[in-house]
Length: 133
Image (cartoon, rainbow, N blue to C red):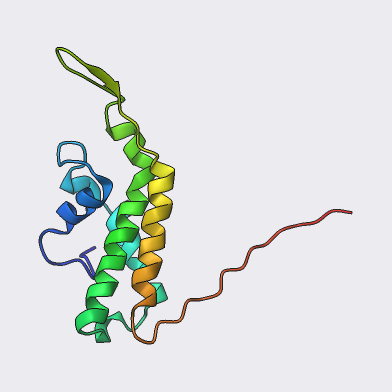
């Protein structure tokens, strides 16, 4: 399926920049796989069904929201893509990124972008729970 929103070159670099990784660790083919880019675009199209009518700042905000969502969607798999340690001739260090925390920050930024779109109204999020007596 062709991309609905991210059609210009450079979006893969934007995603990698948000995640703080380089191309050898996160290839364009992974970012462009339907499990990541297509799902991010479709989920945000559901939230902003009139995305084709967006102009200027609103369009930029929507595209940024997709980038943030795409980066957040990749976070769980990043734990397995990066080396756990870095070593050189005179040093050795543990590499650690809290991917769950970064994912939450990216989703927060996505929501901020969506809220800055003119006329966007966030759908209520309901939490469902059971209580036993």
